[in-house]
Image (cartoon, rainbow over all chains, first blue to last red; front, side):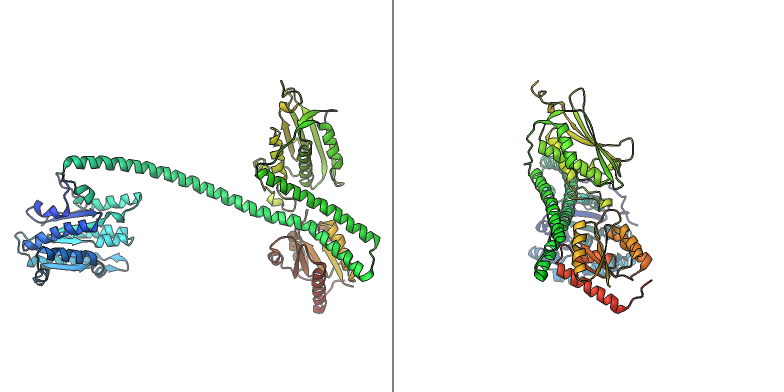
Length: 492
Length: 128
């Protein structure tokens, strides 16, 4: 019967952490322990390992090494340098050096550990070397890094399971076991959970050399303090990074949306430009054919062609002007030149020019005269955009009313009300966005710039524009200019 | 005589196509949107439909869907569109051909004549 070396077992008195090589000096009556050594540098591990295995071999006891090829070679060189005859010890059955990966494969099946084969294979090995060791009690020093290998391969659960298989084996055999993990295997803060599990599976945990190489308690306490500060600072920094990452992710999604909107816009703009060009090119080719075939053009054809050229070029001019406005706006170069303007006259003139089909009627409601400091060209553009919008989004026709009124405080409201499709409440902000188009109504959408420019121009006048629900189905766009827009008020 | 139905919301494009097609000896009907086109088709059956896609009211997709429901593939459809993915749009409605805007008049007339000719050659049944 042996002392259980299970997961829950903790020695009653805390043992001061010592490097692996010191284990020989703490020998209990029975040489039984399961420790883990963390290390930063291979040379340090090999130095400790050669003391650990070397002391057992020198005493006539046994050493079992299940390690990587590099560590086995390094260890053999160091032990030989110490004057140990390894081939002799091996011939006596007291020294066994096995490759970690190969040994692992003897009890792994389809990526899973086979506990029975492990007990059979490794237990048999321990029993064989125990029989050859001469100490009383016999000391079997085992070094294993199959666990580190499993962890390095991403098989975290299997690594922990193997640690417990070793603990189970300690119920049937008496041996000292040292595992070793390079600290570099745990580069992430989230690896802390795994390190905790590894520590829990061992009786004894030996920190890496930057701590254990310190010989004096004062130095160790200073190191602990520094490490605590570092841990806290890192935690704070990680949290900060995470926040920054989140912000970046959001920004990235926004940019992606902006790029998609721009792409959509470009394809819509191309479509809008191609339509008038189709009429222009078609008529030009038609008239040229007539000239080539007959040497003359019928007057009504010529008139139709010229009318097409006139109206389609006007459409193109309008489109290009809007594109140019947006380019100016994006570059921050859109400017206004406010002058004292009679808004009533401006509205009446705009209404007179407005193209309108017979399904719609335009009406004006307002005072006889109302002066304000506005850029007349840009303000007419605002009204034209709102009127175009009202007509476009009331395909069923109806009255479009422009109302102009002044509040007692001097602020001015210009509203355009239609009996059309209306704007859903949740869309009332979005419609003013750049490139916004009423996607469900793609045949009605133009470039998606009208309302964007409208808001920009109104804001250059220090006013605002919003959408209201009129008393009837439809929509009402309200432009509000501040009292300062009234001539004479600015100076007060 | 071969009859062509031009469906486009742009009056200038309709008028220009009407002149050009008439010069080639076709009879031409016009419709400004899908709804008018559906009425026209049931009134006077054309041999080829030239169909714009983006139109107010009933657009080209809706027209094509309703038209196929009622008449299947009796009359070939040639899609006229300024959209960049014209081939895909034509495939969407299973059109017999497409021409992208702005088109070369001769290319359009050749396409119409090829499709009108093959329609005749197939000898499809005609109602009435």
